Amino acid sequence: ARRLEGPAQARLVLAEAHRLAERLQTRTARLSVALADARLADASADPAGALRALRASASEVRPGDAWAEWEVEALTARAFARTNQLDSAVAAGRRAVAAVERVRGNLGSTTLRSIVVAQRAAVYGDLVLALLAQGRADEAFTVADAARSRSLIEHLGEARGERGVPRQAVEADALLRRIDYLLQQLRDTEQPGRAERGAAEDHLATQLESELATARDRYEGLVARRSDGEAATGGLLGLTAPRLDDVRAALRPGEVLLAYLLTDSVVVTFVVRRDGLNVVRAHVTKETIGHQVRLVRDLWSRPGSDWQRAMPAATALYRTLVQPAEDAGLLRDATRLVVVPHGVLGQVPFAALPHPLSGEFLVRRYVVTTLPLSSGLSALRSRSVDISSQAHALAIAPFPDELPASREEAEAVTVARLQVRVRHGASATEAMVRRALGQGSVVHLATHGVLNARNPMFSRVELARGSGRTADDGRLEVHELFGLVIQSPLVFFSGCETGAEAGWSDDPSQHGGELSLAQATLTAGAANVISTLWRIDDAGAASFAGRFYRGLVGRLLTDAFAEAQRGLATDVRYVSPYYWAGYLFSGQDGQLGPQTGGPRSVSSSTPTDVRRPSRR
Picture 1 (cartoon, helix red, strand yellow):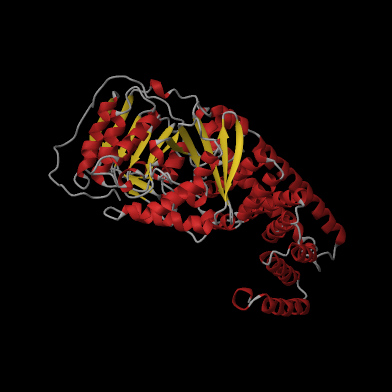
Picture 2: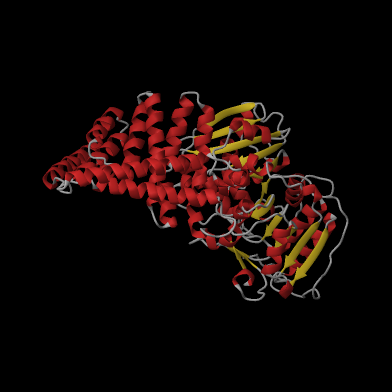
C-alpha cells in the first residue's frame, strides 16, 4: 500500500490490521502487526515512530523467537542510530547479529540457512556504520569480516563428517542447534494453558535454563578457543575473528589490504597498512554497484564482445573501490593490493579496472591478490610451509582432443625448473591428482571446470575416469576437496569459473563469493590457488599459463602472475580482458624452489583438432 498508494493509504491498512489482530487475540498476530508498524516508520525515516512500535512489540517476543528478535533489534538499532544514540545503536546491533546467528543454527537445510542469513545481511552493515560513527574502527573491521564469512560456513554441514572439515565448525554448528532447541522448549513451558501442574513445569524450566547456560558457555568457549591445528583453517572460514594486529603484521613491505563492505548507500573500505587502519567511504548505492558489475561481467566474460563498451562502468568501479584510498594518500607507497571483496564485489575483475584519467589498468600499477576474508591473510601466512623447498609438479590435460591447447599448456609447466610429471588423456586420473595434492606437489589442471549453480558444493573439475570409485570417478568436487588434506604450494585451476560464485541475486550484498573450488582448496591446506571468474578460451589459457610459468624463475608467484596478465593485455591476440582479467590469485605468495628438472612422462601425439573451445 505504501509503495503503490502512499503513506496515508498504508496507515489505513495498518489500522485495519491492528483491529484484526485485537480480534484474533494471538501473540503472533500482534507481533506481526507491530513489526509492520515499525517497518513503515523505518521506511519513512521516522525513528521516533519506529521506537514506539517496537516498544509495543517487546512484550510479545518470547525466548526462542529469534525469527522476530533479529528484526526487532535491527530496527531498534537503526532508529537509535538515526537519533544519534550510538551506544544504544551498537548494543541493539550486537543483539541483532546474535539473533541472526541463532536463526541460522535452527534451520535444518544448509541452503535455506544461507538464504536466511543473506537476507539479514543489513544488520552487519548497520552495526559497522554505528561503530564507525563512534570511532571504533577496529571493532567495525571485525564485524565486517563476519559479514563476509557467512556463506561458506552454511555449506559445511553438507560436508559434515568428511576428513578435513574443521572440528570447530562442526561442533559450533551442533551447539547452535542445541541452543535453539532448548530456547524453543523453554518457550513452550511458558505457553498459556500448559501449566496445570505448576511445580513440574517450574522444575522443567529450571532444568532447561541450566542446560541452556551450559550450551552457551560451551559455544562461547569454542569460538574463543583457537587451537594451533585449526587456526589457519578457522581464519579462512571466519570461525576466528580477525585480529587487526595479526593482519597488519602479515602484510609485507609495499602491501596494502583493502577490505570492502556494501551497505544500502555506502561502500565502506577498510584500508589496512603495516602502520595502521584507515576507513574511507564512497556514497554509492548497492543497486548501482550491482548494475555496474553485471555490465562489466556480461561484456568481458564473452569472446568477441565489444569489451570497450564496459569501460565506463569499469572506470566507475575504480572510482568507488580504489580512488578513495588513493585520494587519501593511503596507497602512495603501495605496489601490492590484497583485495577482500564483499558480496557482488567478489565478481569484480579488479586487475582490469581502468584509472579514470590515464585509462591504465590497475594491474599495471599494482600486483593484485584476492582473499575471501581479512583473517585469511594472517591465517595463510602463519602456515608452516616453505614453498621455496617444493620441487615437484603434476600437470594434467585429461581431454587433449576436446581442448587441443591444454596439451601444450600442461607441457609449459616444465619451464618453471620443477620436476614435472605431465599426464594427458586417460592417465590424468582423479586418483593421481588427489595423491599429488596430498604429497605437496604443485598441481596444474588444464581441464573443464563446471560450476553447479544450484548446489556449489558439487561444482567440480573434470578428470579422466580411473577405477570408477568415488575417489577416482573423474569428478573432483568442492565437498571432496574439503575432505582432503592438501599440502600443495600452488594449485592452478585452468578451467572455467573455478573461482566464480553460484549466481546473481537481486541484492548485491547477498553474494557469498567464497564457496568455490579455489576457496575449498585453500581451506583444505593449499598455500596458493589460481582460479577463474568466467569461462576461459582454450588457446588463451595456454598462453597465460606459459607466460606465468616462464616468469616464475627467481620471482614471487604474484609477480609472475601479474606479469602474465600484463603480457596478455599488450598482446594483440589477447588484449580483451576476456582473456586475462578473469584470473584470480589467492594465497600466501612466495617463491617456488629454483630446482631444475623436466617432464617425467608425456602421453600420446599432438591432436589435429584446431577448434577454439572454452573449458566448460
